[in-house]
Figure 1 (cartoon, rainbow, N blue to C red):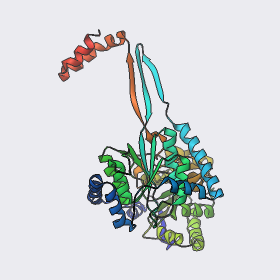
Figure 2: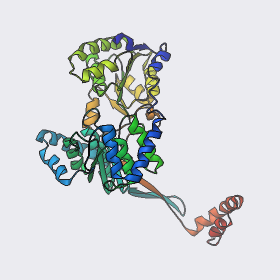
Figure 3: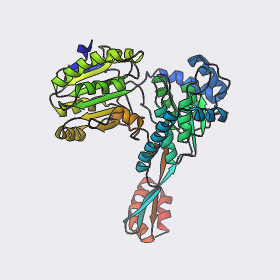
Figure 4: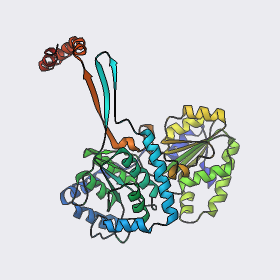
Length: 436
C-alpha cells in the first residue's frame, strides 16, 4: 500500500494534486445554510437552543451550558503534579513568545515637519475560544489560545468545548485554560457555542472575536460568525504536516516525524518533499515497518493517511527548489526543514506558504505543539497562502493616530481643496480652509 504514495515531481504533478483535489475545500458551501439555521435558533432561543443542538448532534443531555466555579476549581486541584508542571512550563514559554511579538501600546513619529502619525493598540474586550475534543483532548490548543488572549490584555476570556458524557468539560483542558487565565467555561455543541458567542445568551457573553480549530462544521460556523461582525480566523481544520529534507536527514526519524502529525485522524495529511530518491524510498520502507507497532486507533489513522485513498505523499523532486515548489502549492499547516546548510538556506528563502517553519533535526512538531511557545493554532487546507496562525496580535485592534500643526495644514490645503471640490464635498474644504 505504501508504494502508491511515492510521486516524482514534476512528472507526476497532475496525479499528485488529484490526490489532494479536495484539500482546499475546508467545508461544503451547502453546510452554511444548516449552520445559519443553528445561529438563528440560538439568537432567538439562547441557552435552550444550545442545549437542543447538543442533544441532537452530540447526544448529550445538558442541564446547563456553564461550568460552575466549583467544578473548575476541582479540575485544577485534581490535576496530576507531572501534568500540571508541564502545563505551567508551557504557559511560561507561550507567554514569552507572545510578549515578544506583542505590538507597542502606542507609537508616534514625525514623518514630515508638523505631521505626526502613529497607532494606538487596544485589546479586545471579550474573546471566545473553541477547544475541540473530537479526536481527543487538546490541552495544548487551550493553552495556545488562552495565553495569547491573556498577554494581549483581553478583559474576558470565555472557553468553550464539547461536553463529556456527563455534561462537563475535559478536566485537564479546563484546568489548563484556567491556569492560563480563562475567566468562564461553557460546554455544548461546537456550532451552537460559536453561535452563542456571536449573539450572546443567558450564559454566554457576546464576544468580539472567536478563535479555534475544528472540522468542516466548525469552519462553517467561524465563517458565519464573521458575518455577525466577529473577528475570527477561518481555515483551521484537520492537521497537516510537511517536511523538506535532503540526504543529510535520517529516514527512520523522518518517518516518526511524519507519523507524529498524521496520527491525529484519518483526515490528516502529510507531504515529504525531497530531492533524494534514496531518502524517499527509505522513509517509505520505515513507515511500513514502524506503523505496525503503533496502537489502535492511531495505527488505523496512519494506515489511512499513508494509503492510496489518504492524503499522505512522498514526493521526489529534481532539487531543493522543486521541493519548495511542492510545499508552496500544498501550503501546509506545519513545515519542518531538515537539510544541509546550503539547502537549508535555499529552502528558507524559497518557502512562502506555510503556517510555521521548524528548522533543523531537533525542532520536532511535538516541541512546537507543546513547548517552544510559538503558536500551533495554524491555517490548514491551503489557507496558509493567505492567513497566519492565531497569536496575541489577533486579540488586539489598532487606532490610527495623527496630529498636525497649522503650517502642515496650510501645506496640505491646496490638495485638500482640489480633491474636496472634485468629490463635491464643500464642507471638507471649508473645515480645512478656516484653519488656514
